[in-house]
Length: 384
Ligand code: LLP
Image (tube, rainbow, N blue to C red):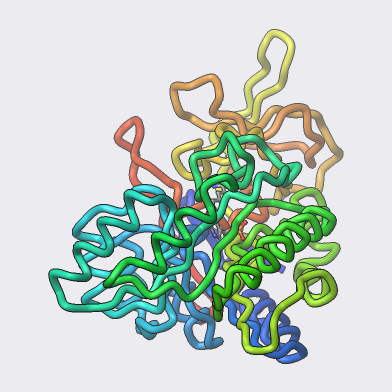
């Protein structure tokens, strides 16, 4: 599946995107969305903002979920329509709010009462109405890594359940604010549909209360979070979007006039990307055999930051298996991609693929140790 002979001439490490899989994934999403009325998908740009990847996502017709002014600028450069942009984030800067107002984005996902007041003030300066969804912290456990849980009471995100009524009333009475809906996002890499069922139950409860108070909204945005299979990425490379959307269709009491918006990131791009790296040295430590590769935590930080485990393949050896720790060259003990894994025996020069790295891989790369950022190639560039 990897064009290994073509990889030989390329400087490692680099990201490789299987754009056939990306297109097939987008097609699967569009096919499922077509089965439901009023479902709208925004791709969560934070997962991967590579312009070549963004272009393919734009061609598939998805909208976008941005969390910074930089992301808004990036997606506009990539040709997304501004009325397909939603803008979330607990700490929106004034310039970012002004930019979003100037571009007349679809809506702000507002995370606090003080933020609401500032958006109102800046919209008033421009004589505009700002469309907003209130982001509610539904206090639901997403059963995922603590660093990527966002909808529990102790998380910084969203408006606390106890404050929802007062902030809703404030939004309704604020002159330059147009309340269009509610926004939720409980976390990422969620693999149990039951967690989304719990979210639906909470939203149903809130909607009933809104109706009692005569508040009408058009949009329910349930964020993203659908997980992928990091252990066996080839088993089902396209996530089960049918079950995911059906979970909402079966459990959320959407009112007939309402749209249901989603912000999927990982499930769209994770499986199409791999980090390709070369073995520099094989070193026998006192207890462990290390494979030292030229990619490090600067190129893919997920294992170091979330103890994430990505499948690793040796693309150029078919020798008998041996047990290794696969580590990078960075001066940090956490610069480890995998511990005690079995790989075909490794030698200097072998190419390894670190799989399922299309989401939160390249975009989180950094230059610690004055390293260069990794390059990236899409399938059609390499195939030429
Ligand atoms: N919407 C909001 C408001 C979010 O905060 C996120 C992700 C998403 C949508 C997209 O979630 P997804 O569909 O990708 O699960 N860097 C971490 C993941 C951080 C997720 C942050 N928010 C990782 O590598 O696992």
